[in-house]
Length: 156
Image (cartoon, rainbow, N blue to C red; front, top):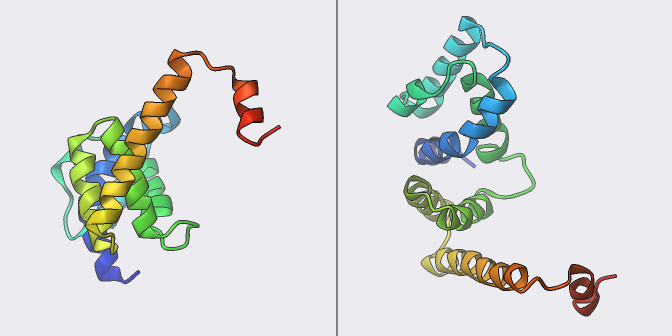
């Protein structure tokens, strides 16, 4: 992925990523105080990567920001992961549609389109999320026996 595409993707996806990782990062990194130099370095890195620092970043707890940013860069923005950017965006969109998160839905849709997803792929990702939720409701609500389910579906 080119630097330009990473920056474009980052601008919209950073909003979603910070919202999604906020709870986990507060728990994971909240106990350890980030030093002022770590925070300042993170702000500088966000600035250089995005061309600016969105206002919501400054609302994020200072102690968690370095870890949250590292997680976003290592997983979502990296082109050295197992999943390509389009797949990551479609997965994130499907999850966002289930949460629901308007910020994420908007951002993930933009990211997916920038990564080459067609309208049909976007629609199918959302439909798959709905289908999974539908059947999960049935299986859980009807208390379908899990061991029987696995055997009948070709498992153990």
